[in-house]
Length: 332
Image (cartoon, rainbow, N blue to C red; front, top):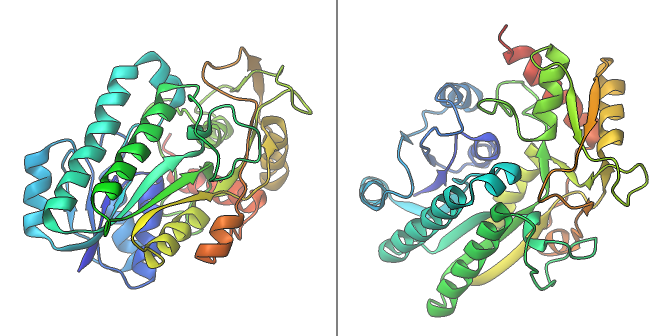
């Protein structure tokens, strides 16, 4: 029996594949390569010394997913496949609602038909909207500030309703905060197609000279230095959180924040990157980005209590590993 990882060649998915194989799981990857690269598969096989079955399919395609479940027997699913850029979701909401909702519905439907009970969903801190910080799992979900967050909240509700109708179904909703960093080997990391939407790959591409300067979206938030405060978590800590959730699965819906519980502003982030890697990052303050909030950081006590999981790596590790990956994989 094996674990299906949808979006398994993406940033978080690929690191989770490494963590799963390290713990003895067999893994099958499904990915349509819309925001990932096939070269990641070779990197994963080199890192793990395993041949990893790969299916290039879109999880929206019910026939393709059904055939996959006929060819492979799964004991659980970890669902990463989805669009994830806040700004893009504001400009292209229908793209996000179609892809993120239909992929989850299709996958959950086939899991139900095939008797696959364990389902781990890649959710996000954006579902908390403008709640007070720190965010904790008992909070009522408010309307989110962007369509991306709405798709995550709606998928959570869909999976919750599925559990209500099927009491033996096991769903873990993992709300993660801001994953950054890379595998310490430099073999895999965050390599988005086109101009990055997230802070760390934007910084590393400025550091290599690919991009002229970093854009800081707003310096007039009600925070100590005016820039947005986020809870940054090393992607390998996040990957290990998925393994912990898989191993502690039980019937019902179980929600966990995966973060560090500590907020860092954008300017603090830039200073740390410069200090750790001894490189200057030019930046320009531009207007706030639609859909962003001032503060976002986690209460992580539930994950520690129930999953025996906590983040082990700090911001310096994140900055060092991300820059190492960029240096090793940057193309002129």
